Image (cartoon, rainbow, N blue to C red; front, top):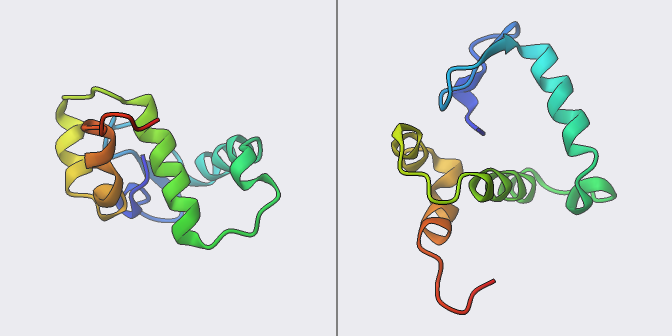
Length: 95
């Protein structure tokens, strides 16, 4: 879940969606390792906005049909605002 509020300080990461707590540096290392296998970003020098779009879309694809408490959190998150409606209510004929 992408949210700047997840990282309280340089040592503490706490996910606002699920409550997972982990050392912030360990979490960052794991994210970099996972992202290194993404074809969309592997050999690209992407601007932050495009990278966030890819990460947000991947997160939403894992949560399709979500109607739980994190959904309200997603609705208030500016990173998700542009993409959430599209994933919750896909247009007919869209891939």
